[in-house]
Length: 67
Image 1: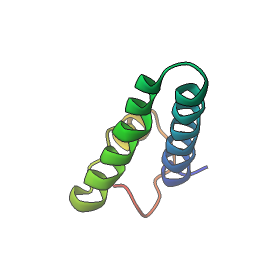
Image 2: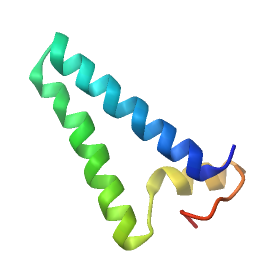
Image 3: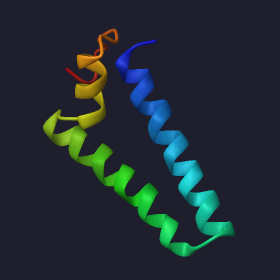
């Protein structure tokens, strides 16, 4: 699996988890999806994604979105 797909799956899991926790536990868990959304937005404009850098250092296969 490429870094691109791992980043997108990780983002989706964190967003869904944060939303579910906000609905059942505390609204403060909405900070999680907000942080992920802001990170994805800044990655779109700057090309820098911290998770992609970590995965690249771990030896994951490079994709076309994050380099």
